[in-house]
Amino acid sequence: MTTQPPWTPSSADRSQVHRSQTQGFHPASSSRPSFSRQSGNLLSSFDTLSLHKSAHPSSLQSKSSSTGQTVQTKSDRARTSPAKKQRRKRSTPFRNAGQNATAEWTVMVYMAGNNLEKYAIQDFLELAAAGSDGKVNIVVQLDRTAGYDSSYGNWTDTRRGLVQKGGKPSANWGTSVGEVNMGSANTLKNFVNWGTSTYKANRYALVMWGHGSGYNVSYDDATGDGMSGGELNSVLGGLPAKVDMVGADACLMSTTEFATQIADHASVFVGSQELEPGSGWNYTPVLQDLKANPAMTAAQLGSSVVTRYGQTYSRGNETLSAIDLTALRNSNSSSFTHAIGSFATALTTSATRSDLDTLDFWRDSLANVFDTDHDSNNFCDVGRLFSGFVSSPGVSAALQSAAQVVLNAHSSTVIQNYTAIANRSTGLSLYLPDRGASQKANYTINYSAAINTLWGEFVNGAFW
Image 1 (cartoon, rainbow, N blue to C red):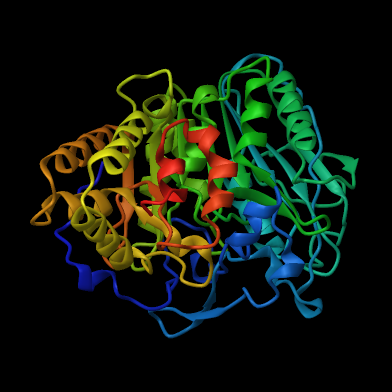
Image 2 (image 1 turned 60 degrees about the vertical axis):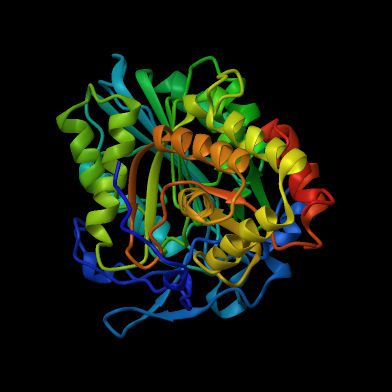
């Protein structure tokens, strides 16, 4: 786990996130432009289970890279315009001779159809540069949408199959499953059931690919539907095989709220607190690492993803972290979520006005660390929020003690963390809106059950 350098409030005051393009480990790294994988107006995601891209046409923004080139962030799927519409790819099963034996790992990548399609194709080729072998199966469900990218046969259904070394996402790759809603839990369940039964392994990884909002992930442009943490949890809990590692190759998904929802049914979660570049994870070196050491644990695989990501984007503002989900389980009495609940209890029972003002000061200092265009600026980095609060003069002893417990639990929750100097994030975000924010009630409705503590009640209560 990386350590963060000292920080002062002024260092959080920065403008838009920039994406730099680096050589990294990508075979064609010079063409890794950044397009944000964030999904639209987060406020609307409280009101409906999914975010509708059509509601946020302005979320696509050009950002300048450190090289002076224009880069885009994996922001809202909503940013699609007629000129940028692209195709959606569908992945289907393709059983390969020699795949009957149980492998060590099956890696399943679920690529939703949206305006990131050219990056879906790029990532497919990265997966194929490593390719499946007897120890590691790589399977993909790829959804394409008409109007985005015309390469590889310009097909527009959904296909799934095994990714072989040197393979291409052509119209005859894999098997078609027709036109499906990739934001549907049933579609995901069907894919994962197929992947785990057709390509059996000792361990499984599932990567949710596409746009993210901090609440939902893998938005489908055709339906506007995205996968909520609760839906993903229901899928994972209903499988005959355990998924060991879950990843979100999408913007803003390393939140306490989302990770807690899936904690009972996976061991490790990998996600970003920040906007992700459109090119996302660098899959080739990660899978080469896995093929070289197929006995990797889920924690080791998650660490590899984070390390290779940091090497690829070493000059940008990107973040990525691997989270120990066992430390977020409500059944764990020493869990991070229990620590958050105890802190919330201390706030509601013994906080002075000065204590609340101090917490608000640190919230405001961190509000623009992540994406500033949407409700995501109400997600605060846990390490920096609580470190700042604990170190502030005048904080009551009870609150300092409770905040320190949160910091200790957080430290043991983050397995590996990569962060840019500009934001110095520490691995997990927590929702803390400005006082009186109109969306507070919706947060309680959607996430109080997920966190199962008093944090939601505090956020929505009279004290805040």
